[in-house]
Length: 281
Image 1: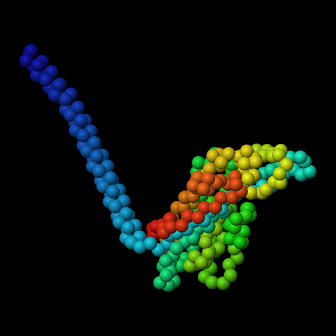
Image 2 (image 1 turned 135 degrees about the vertical axis):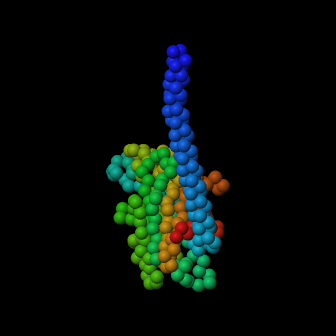
């Protein structure tokens, strides 16, 4: 009788071990499948990325469009809120007019490749700004270097330019020649930098320029800004080119020891391929 009991006990132990082994085996199989799936996913992602890089490299074997010059003019202006009082109460605006000159490499002639059928600006960002309410506008080139806010020309989500091939352009609205005969002109405006900007020293005439910022006690560090936006071009071959432009709003020039407090600040950046357009389609 003791031997039979022993045999039954061993059989029960074996029966208990069997499902445990089965569970472990199934778990290992599932784990292996998950690992294989992840490896395949990583491989496919890497292959797709490699192919996209190869394709972008092929599409950009030569440069068709680039920004070779950026001209910046910074100053300030204001609206007076009170008159006939021994104090100036002002709404001050810091503004920077921007001209982007695009090189379309037309030295050997104008072609479908180096002329455009559409141009769009979007993805506008005001980075590292501590004080104020910043906006970006299309700027009438004839009003360059003076504050001229036209709310209809504010670039909010995006702005598409009218493309013209020849004839006179109406620069009051966003327009550009298909061969980049004119620059892209924009205006950065920062307002509401300081509440109740009052200037009590009225012994000297008030000059409506960058000196307003100093008289109004507006710190240049508080209004420093890195402006960025995306420019998308489609040429007459329906090829798509994209560039992201980054501009540090010029407020000080350490080389010449000058600043916008002196009235105005001009910065001219000129070089080949300052910003290169990358063909994506």
